Image (cartoon, rainbow over the protein chains, first blue to last red):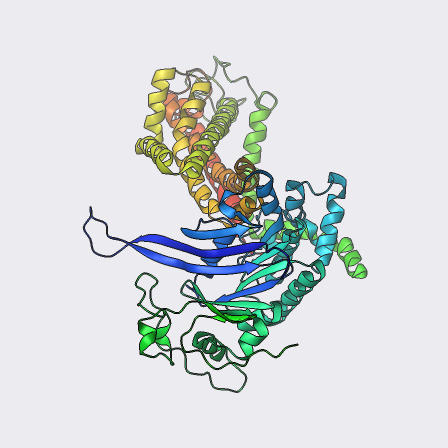
Length: 331
Length: 295
């Protein structure tokens, strides 16, 4: 990638101080919960990246850092080579306009007292992207683009179905003419046919408008359909990253393998789930943080912590004893 | 698609009428109560046209005449004043005080509640302890304290009862603000770069005003009751104003042999209060998103 990345995370750490059990009223024992622990990612123009992981893996914290809603405790989060937390003036305006967010809770992200017209027009008005007279036409065009009838304009959130809500949320995100779409579980909780429609819409939009897409999900199928690249997170760390196709075809990290096995398939018995529980991010065991649940763990896994190391130009993983994977054939 | 929308256009008007009829049928008490309140409001507004006599006129020939006496449908009081006329004029004071006080209370509650809910931290703590202090005193006692400072009169009663209502209103406003502040659409507006004041104005305020308006309709009856209580105690409106509370107090001494003197304004008060609460409940049930059926 020759063009400069839009987002760049450099060893981002986010730790929360939590009060531990025990300790008296006055000597509050504090411990650090590492929600993100050294995450390194980048997102270039036109790229699509899926961030996959179980709940508690730090996906949402990562998102909040990217959007500037929380400050990383260590490392740097950059938007067009500038720290997101320090953006000001025109940089800040640009960030607000170029980065559009699609929330998991579409209903909650839309003001129930505003009509669809006002909801979609709000970014237009705010960024002064069109004249008052054009407003209605622009909203009509946006609604048509996401597959909604323009008659929807006068409706309110309470009168829309789940699928329609997502479409309104997407139309609203597109209104500010962004360069990056950030979507947090944007298709979870929809029935399968609606989910497919929304996914197709997102993919078309991404391709046609040349948007960058950062898609947070726990569904590997969704990630595979939508994104060229994938980053698998476990306990605040990226354990495997690379081209989606390669990673899902032959995962190198046992955790990715386990995630793949966990997704149910037709007529096949559900494979044995991962043993044990996700350890608390407060009391991380030494060594590899996945070692306690890993079927391939060996003695050095419990003492030495693997770092995310590139194995090929398109793949990287953090594992001492990776699964055998084939080198990508040149295409 | 085009045909369909034309169909909808055609059937829209009858559908709306039948919807109103269906609403009236299933909420018969609401309709009755709303009609009663409307009658009170109209007779208060047009009191000089509706009342058979001026409220202060004394009929020297008919002191304490019982209801259905000639010329005096609901009888007269101990000064020979027509009770029906006085009750009709009394509705003016009751409703003016009720709505005026609620307006003051709601505005005050909105300001204090919004300030507390939005500021957080020490400011919120201080404001809410202040509201707790207000709430610790019953509204009637608060109002008495205010009137003893301000003096008597309709405007002072409105102010006193209104201030006493600020406490409960600001509590509900603050709770709503806290709930709405945490919603994703507020965060989304912030991400879009909307300024804080604009977020408050466009996203938080509309979502707070509405439940507040519903609260206000419910509290009107309470304000009427408190103001009548003040007048009954002799510290609200000064005689000879035709105020219901005052009229009940005047009729109290004759209650054993001329019960209508206190009974007529008392009944009017009771009917208005019941009607107002039914209307308030109906409004809340219809507009509360949690109780409303999703369309």
